[in-house]
Image 1 (cartoon, helix red, strand yellow):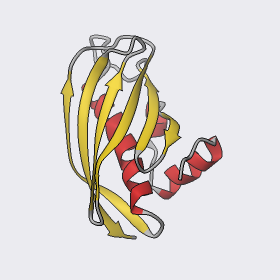
Image 2 (tube, helix red, strand yellow; image 1 turned 90 degrees about the horizontal axis):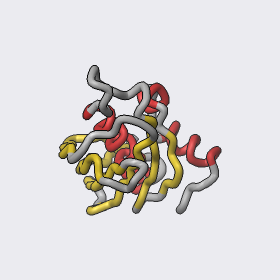
Image 3 (spheres, helix red, strand yellow; image 1 turned 120 degrees about the vertical axis):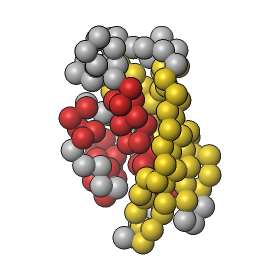
Length: 138
């Protein structure tokens, strides 16, 4: 199943338990399937005191995208719960938007793992993250 319609994406995010943090961060989902989720987030409002994109904001974007993919993989009546995340910050971003692409590395019955690549508007890698979610019955 591929979600591209904004209403479908919104409904899937609500079902996946998106919560309020991604909304506060300005995260927008562009495309969502169990194999690949794409989203973007503004740098403005998500910076640390030096005006650089906050590393924690990159991790929020990564976990949002990976968790949504895992929830879509888990399927109806099941939930995805993050159990491990890591992030390597390669370069800073100071303006515009960053885009994250979560790609499923493993999709089993009880675990799903995603690699999330976050890039700036010039296509330069800002952060690489990996998220593992446990899949359980709701």
